[in-house]
Image (cartoon, rainbow, N blue to C red):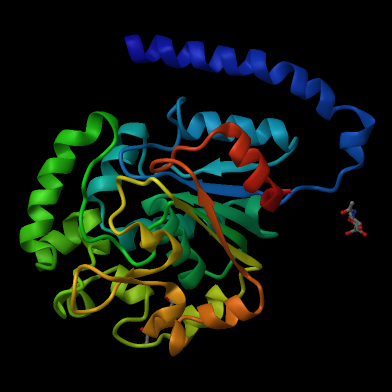
Length: 309
Ligand SMILES: *[C@@H]1O[C@H](CO)[C@@H](O)[C@H](O)[C@H]1NC(C)=O
Ligand SMILES: *[C@@H]1O[C@H](CO)[C@@H](O)[C@H](O)[C@H]1NC(C)=O
């Protein structure tokens, strides 16, 4: 009951806030603007497509700043409850296929789109770029994504802390068992640097990061991006190691020292095309001075909006 009335209040408030923008957008200057590139958003763990405090609010901000833009905030499942649960429990490869189908069927996206993923949503969108080249993704913005996975789950945000504790327990004991891999999202980007189990048994991350074999299709598709922007949070207490947000990780065989993307085998052998993209000026490394996914609206306007105009 509370949540319904709250949602209605949020919608009404949104309409009120949107009113002056609508007037601006119907003025002659806006009409003269070219059509904007649509934007696809993929939320993080413990969040949903339409949470009025996070993705819903962000969608509104973007729509106000870029009048006429089509923003699709992905819902994985039939409703927001399923969407949030699936972020913990639905096999990532299945989620990526579902999203590929949805994008292929959306008439508004057929000319191409930009994509912005939050936390795990960022590496999932990269998988979309690598596996499903049509319709074409133009710029991918990863906000706190874990492109080399995580080795630790120190803290979860908000109400989801109980489920996070359970997940941490399971991951530390059995991340690479088939059952856990198939049914626990976080296990699919769990990256244990101390042994070879990750490379052999990770169903998702080891595949898209070309750990077992080099899939030339992945390499070719990823390089179709115009830009691949990665945002790292300098005071992140959620992602471990935080270097993963810039595609770095712990050096293999130990759990202390980290290496940058440029120092990694992935880059040196250019197994994914990232070195070529770097040389072509397509990789953009940004940092935000906050905890995981915490940034002031002004930072977003200054640093990320320019990629969407
Ligand atoms: C708008 O699109 C036209 C046709 O594609 C192009 O020639 C023109 O430069 C564009 N204008 C702006 C401001 O991007
Ligand atoms: C490479 O990736 C493409 C796209 O997902 C897939 O269709 C193909 O089967 C993969 N090839 C190999 C050898 O795994």
